[in-house]
Structures are given as structure tokens and as C-alpha cells.
Amino acid sequence: MRTVQGAALDGLKARVRALAERTGLPVRSAWGEPRPRATERAGRAPRGGAPLADTGPAVPPLGAEDPGRRTSVKEPIRTSAGRPAGPAAALAPAGSPAATPTVLASLGALLTAAGRPRPRRRPGGVRASAAELRALRARHGDAPALVRTRSGQTLLVLLDPQDLRRFYAEPVSVLAADPPQKCRGLSTHEPGRDGDGPGCARGEQRPERRRMSADVLAAGLPVHPAAGPILTVVAEEARHLTATGTLELARVRRAVNRAARRIVLGDPAAEDDELAGWLTQLRAEDGRPRGGRTRAARSVQDKARARVREYVRHAGDDTLAGRAARHAGPVDTTDPDGAVDPADEARLWLLAMDAVPDTLLRTLLLLGAHPCEQDAAAAEASAEVAAGRARGELPRLRACVRESLRLYPVVPDLIRVTRGETEWRGVRHPAGTAVLLPAAFHQRDPERVPAAHVFVPGRWKNPAADRDIRMAPFSHGGGRCPGDQLGLMITAAFCAEVLRGHRITGTRPVLDPVGPLPVTLDPRGVRLTLTRR
Image (cartoon, rainbow, N blue to C red; front, side):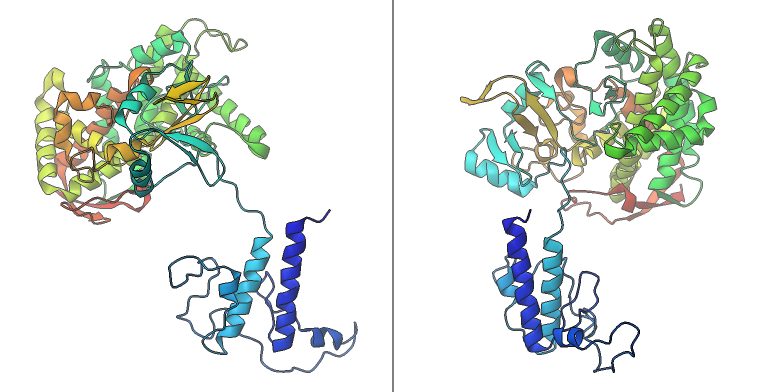
């Protein structure tokens, strides 16, 4: 059955072909080859006959007449007012006859592309720029604003810190977790029924799982009880970071992931590249198999679960898996609601540490751009060797890591869904309303945060900074990450190992130590130059 849109599109294509026939110019197909004119189609040779004589040179491909001209149809055509032009602007007379084939070819490609389905946005891909949020706050004041995204989703956006406090304080019976697809923090992930949910620890965890996570990860303790063995592993694996004079993301990921497997499962897991590959696949799938990849993803989950369970059986008491095994009761694999499986918890902790390499590299990049902060951090790292029982605290380096997470949070936006009718600032909203907390916006809001776009680790020396509702690198309230202190200890220890014997003398990209820092910072493009101290 033909639709009205399809009929209109075919009619517009026919008008373009008729225009081409009158002007003698070809219209390019979707594959970039010129379609023959009507006169050529009528006079073509029958099958098996002699080919027709060449009637002249072919029209050059897009951009051939002027290599410096932009002819890509992916770039929108701009009007003098700066707005994208529509089809009428594309059909406007060109400045020269040579430009006419380019205009017609671009229009033909545009018409062909218009008939293709647009890629769908992923459900968790809700992003808003700081300028848009500031404009929204200017129109609505501090009250929550109900907006509709381009994908049609309706969101209640929180723009005032008072509402942030309520957002973190509400129980899951009022605000249910609906985290972004790529929720990869230094915290443990909230497992679903199969133990592979991607959410940060905000879901309806069973009391047994909450108690185990808090005890094994030593929630609230600056120095983990197993800090000695953990810091030894970090020191040994950090040697791979300084083996050459340069440092990039691939090297950091390999060293940190090796350390994570040793810290969670034990030393034998360090060389298990097969398990590392499975975990990489699970991260790529976000822990949720979709569509036709369900069977393959389930197979990877099962293999990773079996391998981790084997390591847990032989894990030592100084590993996280060994500590979890001591707190868990007998595991009944046939009962999903039975005792907590330490193997599932260990696998989730490994997935959670995926954010450490990015945070570590960004922190070192920021220190490289601020020589005074780097020298102070290096002095602390050198003095920490003789710290004794206080080894692992590293307050200055922890402040640098926190500031890096403030500037570049792992989860920039938090989304939760109301389970019943709720009232925000006197306005009632029905059940199922999605509530958006733009954490990255609030942490870098120049109207509320001093030096919002500048690297200032000293702000974290104040104990009240950790309770500041605007700053949420590890969330607040009952959903606060139980592994925040452990993650800070590991990341700061890696920074200390690098700075203890080396100086960061060159960085890419080059950051302005005084001016505002970029809004985003892709760790894949970071490259550091190290020299011996």
C-alpha cells in the first residue's frame, strides 16, 4: 500500500528527472553513477547488438570540477541567515553553469536519502548542552521544566539544587532507576535477574547484596582493609605504564584491567586474556543482549560466569572475590532468588572498573597541564612511601581525581521514572514520568559553582565539598556508590606510581591552564610524554 509521503516523494523525483531531460543534464543515482537520459534509453542498442557511439564526455563526479569546493550532501546547506535551506534553496539558480550539475546531483542524492529510514536514537541517549539548559532555566526559573526531546520522549528536567536533594533522597518506590545505557562508573553495577544489569547501584538491591557490597568494598573507609596487597598489585602493574616515554589509552587500559583481575580474582587471572575478551564483549553489549545478538551475548555471559566462578573457588583472602566468598552462604545456581553468588558480584566489580582507565588518563592530562599541581602531587607520592599504616590515603591526589570526575563525569545524566503520581513545585505529574538530572551541567554551572570550568583540586579539601549536592561523581543518599573510596584509592595509587619517578612534560591535547577547559575530553585522543625525574 502506497503512503501519501511515498507518492509525494515519487512525484518530486519525477519533476527532477523532467527538469534534467529539458536541460540535457543527467541525474545521479544513489550509487553516484549518472542515469541515462530519456533519449539515450530510447536509442540504446538491443541485447547483443553493437554499442552506441560515444556522445561526449561524461559529467564529472561531485567535486571534480573544483577540488576545494564542499559538495558533500551530509553538510546542511546554509542560508544567509544561518538556517538550513530546504529544497527551494537547492533549486535556486547557481552562480555559474558548471555548478548546475552539482546542485541537481546533490538534490537527487538528497531525495534518495530522504526515502531511507533514519537511525533510531537509543533510549538512554538523552543529552542537552549547557547553553540549552541555561536557556531553559532563564525561561522557567528554578522550577523543573517539562520538555519533549526530538525523539518524542517527555522529560522533567531538574534545574535547581533543592530538587536535586529530593532526587537523591527519594526511595526507589517513588523514583525507580532508569540509568543511561552506558552507566560505567567506579561503583558496582546493579545486576538484574541474570546478574548483568548495567545500572549504577540505585535499583532495588536485595539486602544481602547491599550488605556484601558494603562490607567487601569497605564503603566509607578511605583506606581499604586489604590496601597492602592492592597497592602492591598497583605498583607492579604500573610499571607497564612507564615502560616507554609515551602514555596512551590502550596501555593504560591493559595495565588497569590486569590489576583489576588480580585485585578481584587473584594473581592467576592476570594473564587470562580470554576472560578479558569476554568482559570487553559484555561492556560493548552494555550487559543487555538485544535483538539477534541475544544468543551470542548469553553465551558470552555464561562463559564469563563459569570462568569467574572457577577463580572464586581458589581466591585468596586478600582478594575481593575471596572476601565475598567468606560472606556468602551456599550458592544455589537453580534458585535466582537464593543467596548472593560471589562470582556474579566479582564479575560486576570487574565491569565496574572499566571507568578507571579513562579517569586515570584524564587526571594525568590535567596534572600535565598544571605543573604546580603536578609537583605537589609528585611530592605527596614520594612521601607516601614512608607513610606506613596511612599508606593509600593520598588526599591531594584523591582531590585531583575527584576534580577530574567533576569536570568529566562518567555518567553525565541521571534518569529515573516515577512509580506513582508525584508533585514538583506545585505541579502534579503522572506515574511513568521520566525525571532527568543533568549532573554534568550542575557540576560545571558557572552561575552556581566557582571556577566551574577550571581545574581546582583544592575545592575538595573542604570536608563539606563531599556533601555538596551539586557535586555527584559518586551520587548521594541511598544510591551512593559503595566502592567510591576503593575506586579513589586505586586511581590515586596509579597516579602516584607514574608521578613518583616521572614528569609529564608534554600533553595532547594541549589544555589552557588558566582558561576554561573543554566540555568533553575523549581519552582516546590523549597522549602524554613522560621523562625521568
